[in-house]
Image 1 (cartoon, rainbow, N blue to C red):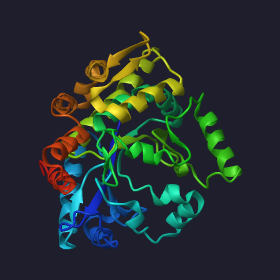
Image 2: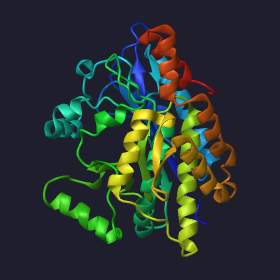
Image 3: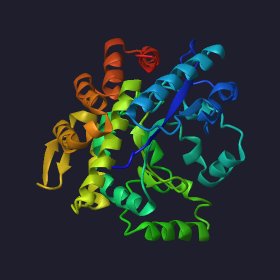
Length: 365
């Protein structure tokens, strides 16, 4: 079995400890971070966002070590600037209109093209890369993995507030991001050449200048031999990030195993998978999703348990049983959205929700 290497990217909020509003780090976290973290720390479109990414990790233990190290480092760097770090898909009350855009030619071009959709895209996600053998395997994986995206997304939901309002969604982040083109559940591709022809056509016709402008919930990375999951909200605790990344890796390994045994995973229409994604965004773990095999609504929690059963025979080979089983703990304690909402209902105070987010971000470090 291939190694199925891992890379994890997390997008953090930089927060004013007094007002609890988002506050620009003026690239100081990034510039200072480059001394020790080099290219592992990056600015994002808005100045109140800082992204960190692991190196290529050979297994989930390495990934855990790197994620914990990066969280500690970014918290320390922020503290030196008099700032705090938060991990959530949206800020509970800061307005995007008040947040400056990072000066950069790349971001200038995106804002020029996408206008208000880009300026308002003040959201925070978690991306996971899983190494694959080649691009044909990657397209095969992308087709099959689409079915499981809503399950993974439901576990990650962590953005119930937007500009001071309770949205009614467990993930409002995804509703904000859907304003961008080329987002959401991808369609089916027959092969890597079919996929490459699609990207080439978009470049030729001036839709994009490179494949990174495709922001689907899962994509074959245009430059690396990886499958990149992009659907998840930024999660509160490092343990949650690691658990979901472990399940993502296990899914790739399981589908690869089935293929090597000449067993195909059944494929479903993107339009059907989008129905489950909407349910996950709205209800998180507490709703139902469609089991397309039996054509019935099923509690989301039950489908996630079935997902854990599905990957059970590969997790020991990957050395990730402990991390995958943390999903059971996540279902017990509720998603980040559930816990944010609990704090708000107990206190009626969104600044207390921000304090909770800051505390959870540093949990276990």
